[in-house]
Amino acid sequence: MSSSRRDVLKGAVAGACIAGAGGLSACAKKGAGAAPASMTDGVKLTEKIIADAEKVAGLNFTARERAMMLDDLQGSLETLAKTRGATLENAEAPALVFDPKLPRRPVKSQKNALVLGGTYAAPVPANEADIAYASIAQQGAWLRSGALTSARLTEIYLTRIEQHNPALSAFITVTADLARKEAAAADKDFAAGKDKGPLHGVPYALKDLADTAGVLTTWGAEPYQARVPATDAEVVRKLRNAGAVLLGKTALGAIAYGDRWFGGVTKNPWNPLEGSSGSSAGSASAVAAGLCAFAIGTETLGSIVSPSERCGTAGLRPTFGRVSRAGFMALCWSLDKVGPICRAAEDTAIVLSELNGYDADDPSTARLGFTYDGAADLKAMTVGFVPKWFEEGDSVDRAALEALKSLGVTVKEFPWPEFDFAPLAQIVTVEAAGAFSELTFSNRDDELGWQDKEAWPNIWRAARLFPAADYVQIDRLRRRAMEAVAKAFEGFDALIGPHYAGGALLATNATGHPQLAVRTGFAQTPTRSRSADAAKESGEKFRTPRGISLWANLFEEGKIIALGRALEEALGAARERPKGF
Image 1: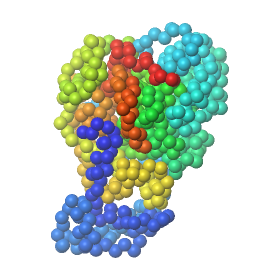
Image 2: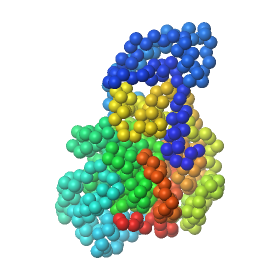
Image 3: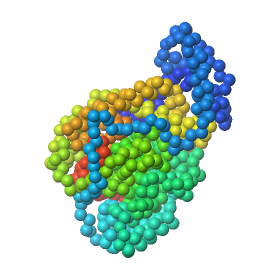
Image 4: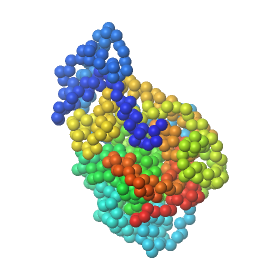
């Protein structure tokens, strides 16, 4: 399995070069501005065209079989014309809704309960950077005691954004006026004895995939730079109802891929010469640099975990269906997830407690409570590990495993499935091609700044040649993978391992299992070139964060958050800040 999310996606693109005759007609040379339906007009299929298509599709029909299917395939062109003639908005989801829950494997019911494991009685520091870097839990304690106002906390962050964002390109839009208005309202509430919960008065940043009424929501992409939605995403409404203060919209790799957007490349505060990884690039960069208390990210295939690894943040990818995606850009309906990026593992529980819940506008959401008990006895937990993953890892990985053992939890070998998860990456390419058909067929994909073999325009075109019947087969393999991973988790509360080991990132995204990335140490690394602009590597090395991942059973995020918090305390690495910030 490839070591990075990008490598996984590259493998999927390579596998996309198989086609049926219908696929060939779809990828005929486009005329500028050609309407989708018109691409099939006047196309007359022949047996020779079918024979040519067979070579790309790995098929071998007889001449008689080709002759028999000719009329059916010609009719398929008419179906394609009608389908492509329909105007479908990005928000319109398919009829089939993915559900990670399996028959005969009931999910445990939970109450909505949040018990923090730490004590937060420290006085407000004199240094404003110390205030900015404090945890959500600590800031909340100061706000409720009256020792700190939301207005002051908001101004601290707005000043830091003005100071540091030019070097990081973490924010696309700063909503300073809105933030000041919401902070003033929070302070008024506190003065009146009204407390909306643990996020009341706490400033946050929002990945620019989420709709914000009257505020630019660009998806990080050139074709949508002027896009202003009329309504808020459900997550935005929930955070507003919780009293959180919106500082602005964070940068993302264009259309949720990488760290390159129309304004440049978002940088890693630990080494501003390299990209922050993505696609929740600005969210992780802003949190790591102390430009907000927390941020909202999204993940389809690594977009919370990957930038959290790079920037050293605590990134939680919740169970699929835990958080509503209504009002977020759809990339892959059966894989997209929304989650928090914070500086402390326990803070992710605080944010998730406000985001969790069923939403009729997102039929994938589950009717389940969320329980987090930071004071729970970890000795009652059983955590699995795969020895090979740590043998192939480094000293930071192994130190995290030893720290986990020192906490008194039961640690034993985990039976990770012997399963080829690689084909499941094709789900992303096919669904994304459908989500952005308009860009492909209108030639507006040419407006995207990144034009390369690994970039979206090429991925979408290649996906057009992937046979529908084989996509169904991959979906059936996905169900088999879900069963295999669920069986492996029997008797375990959690799994620990390097972020990308054993194909676990791809596998658990496909099965819907939650993953938490936490910082556990540091390494001396040269400038890395994973960002879309391929920053040049140099001999100079930088002290950059390293981390470990924790996975849990479906909807049991509370357990891995408690473990993550304990690891942070045991190792102490999460307290360090990037120089200059």
